[in-house]
Picture 1 (cartoon, rainbow over the protein chains, first blue to last red):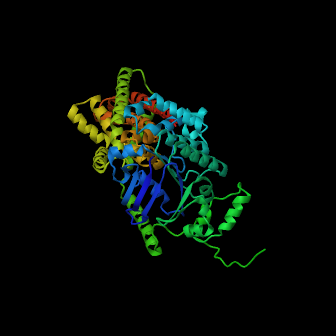
Picture 2 (tube, rainbow over the protein chains, first blue to last red):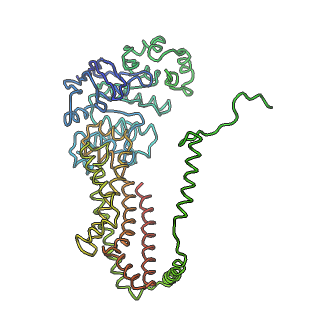
Picture 3 (tube, chains in turn red, purple):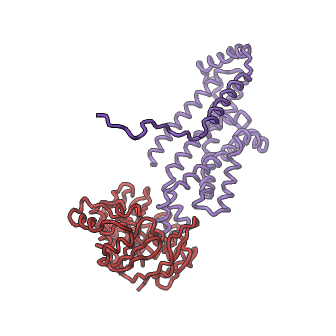
Length: 273
Length: 269
């Protein structure tokens, strides 16, 4: 089975800001990894280095036998199609239909003329319909993406990523602009999909409570370095303080336990760190 | 109930441009003096203006009593020529502008292509239509072919520049998402960029159609055919009633294009 392995992954931006300092860890197949940390800790950069939307400046990233950090051109595109990505704010192409958005997951596999004429192979189309049913949007395939609600759009985003038949799922703040209930549904959907397909996944997430509830393992990132790596249950108050800085963590947990509706994302507590 | 106010109650927006008070006053005063002096340097020959009023009035009279019939053959020929010129040059302009516009977008094109395409745009935009028309009339002779080339060339600079700017202003996350699926460059253009810029491209093309029609009337005066040539002849012959008829037709066509383009734009949103 495919394993994702990061070895001394580093990224320094052209501006001189170091986003990642020699980050190393492994994600085995089927593991859902939550990546937490304050804003600017390098979570987004880390995820984007893996599929090379951001160029890493050092280290290696291997998925199975491929070293992703060393690929270029066609080989890079072939590697990207093996990695599904789900975005903050969904990143659907708004003027395309739901179906086109889902089918765009196949772009790495079909020739340009097929994608241009929207004539995808029959099994791709059938898979798109089955995924839309899986995420509960069977009736919406001909709607334009900008006609959907936030939760629905993220479901389309999930279907697009799964349409790639990925070997790895990268998820960047999937619930950042969703309400608490929808956030939980989306997290559950992503978790179930990973378990069904035995997919490794890395989920960037601001919300510590959601991370604890829906992931198998948590890595805490602070200023580009791994400061915690362990099971979600091991996220004690002192660990949170190590990742985010001082805050009254007990009060946050208490609030969450009594009233889920009035729940505020933990990012607010971590802001200004 | 009044409580003692420890905070300042007055606030003024700090000046943005000239922060030094003395300099600011000096610059404003200087600008005013220059304006007054410049106004005084304009020479107005009131007698000539008085004579011209008469001629101008004749023109207005012609405009108020337009004569569509006497020169109808000339007018209709000129019109058809102008419309042909307008439509063909707009279509040709759009077809050439799309690749150049994509090439001139920094987020899609590599540096050498970007510079080459920006160069073409600058070249096309640095000459006014009339100057290009004079040059092309000298090269290809009088008539609508020179007009077609002029308008197509001018359209390229206009459309490519605005299209490139629109592509650069595209939502980056949509492009990123399509790239992340392993899509090739062509697929990124087709799936992530085209849907975002299409309404604007349609709007710009229709606007350019409108401009090209109006320009076709102007470049006709320097020999590039079309309704402009007819208009020029009418004015030369002091046939202000026919000239008035031509102007009214031009206004009517521009109005029709304007209304239909706003309708089409709403439709492609």
